[in-house]
Amino acid sequence: MAHFAKISEDNEVLNVVRLSDKNCLNAAGTEDESVGQDYLFSHNHWPRHLWIQTSFNTRNGKHALGGTPFRGSFAGIGYTWDPVNEVFWSKQPSPSWSKNIASGSWEPAAGPEPDLTAEQQSQNEADTHFWLYAWNEEAQSWDLQNMKA
Image 1: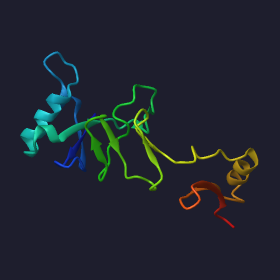
Image 2 (image 1 turned 90 degrees about the vertical axis):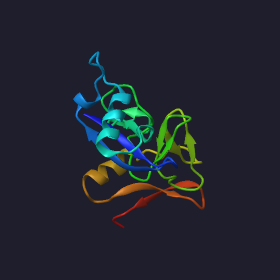
Image 3 (image 1 turned 60 degrees about the vertical axis):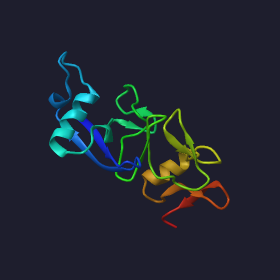
């Protein structure tokens, strides 16, 4: 299945649709974005250039099945299409987070979320605690929280 984002003239994702692969194949039998765009235009009367293919298996610059990541992340309603970098951007999680063009993901000012310790993970699995890190925008840090406390 192929997926396409319907975007506005302002590059906001308005909808995401799924097409049968047969509606995206060119004469050589190869998947071709322009064929999908033509199909969507003829059936939805939305301009061809405002249908952008997206990958269901791509999130934050990684392909879930080990394939090649495609356009940063799978598009979602409210995401923004960046035509220069060919990336779909989710809403900025916090004001201090910045775009990582290479991965197609937002990054916090203090770096990635820390890993839980083995003890914290064990307590989560035993359902005695629910440890997680939450972003603290004011301090621009990851704060450890026990949601069962």
